[in-house]
Length: 268
Image (cartoon, rainbow, N blue to C red):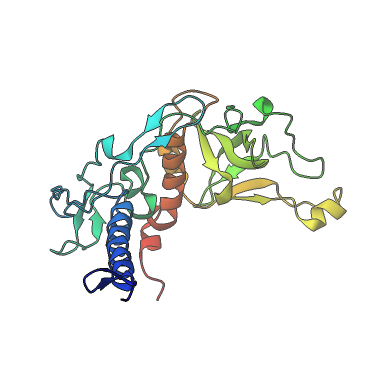
């Protein structure tokens, strides 16, 4: 008698094969569910209709927020409004939208934003991460670097739009994030440091400070002078929320395509 058989001609090898087959089916089912935790249920792009949930859709994913802010479940947040300030270039689900208004203010194309949370980005110990330099944790501008406060600001159309009144720094990364600018009309706006070019801090000016007549100014070529008046403003002075950050960065980023009519045209 062959002791490898369990019942009749059913042996250990067949049992191992069936167990592996069942395990493999369960693994495929599990991985398919896990791959559909985020971005589901699906919606149709043209009309926003939500497709029904299937057996393979995963459960809701919950995120425990730091600093006692509770739990965030993306699926429970209201879905984005499908109304956009533009028209599709042609009749197809994936057709690009052509802006029908002010693309920089409406958040079209490179000026698009995300509806982030309306509270400041925080450091690991719960302090606001991006603040005016005077409110930071002992951050200062190095002695050999330009202080920038009081320097004039030039726009993309080579006009002086105002002066730098403050510097906003990142307390986690120890770097300048924004320049606070007071325009000639008295409005205060924030401009991302990444779109600013500092003139007057060249090597020649450092070596020959008494003989160099290099002009000292900050150039922001992302937008024109008139467009500074529409930069998204802060709701609370001295505090910038994630929501406001996304809109400010999107506004200046969109300027590289929409600030002037020529920028939206092809180079060749």
